[in-house]
Image 1 (spheres, rainbow, N blue to C red):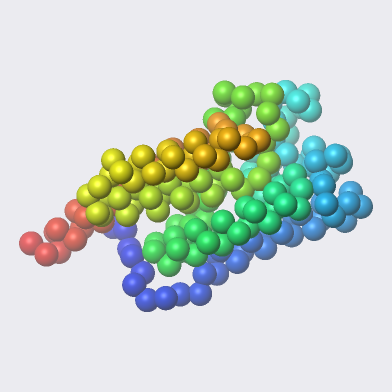
Image 2: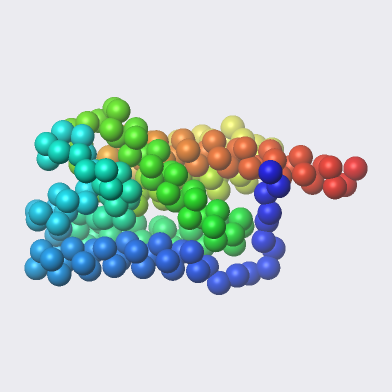
Length: 199
């Protein structure tokens, strides 16, 4: 499959959509809970967050909704800053639909890692998806530059720094792995397509 790179600047519409869903879900939770600062204390949060054992029940939609739900206002603001920062780069690189795909599948990968490796952790937030976006950019550019080892070490360094703070480490790792693998495959595919055109 040919990986298309967008050279011209585009309006990052998909990023705005993802930001809107994340912020909209937080606002809905704040209205339902009557608390703008912290959502994790209320039934709304338990209905949409993802966990294997903590709440005693698994609802199928939680594996998706959890990647748009945040524990508190600072959690939301922090993630939205990095989603915008990294998401706009990725969307201008590979397009809107690809950004949404990477967000969803990286978030899903993070949730599956959490489900398997840390069943007692409550999973909520866009962090797994954001790590996937970061991993994709890191490995894609690393592949094009031919310095994959250094780029991979950089990605792991960022992950280790992040793991010093209270967070769902396995969720972040799962998202990062999905992004790294996807970026590597697309980078190699792009290089192959360029070689075929230039030969």
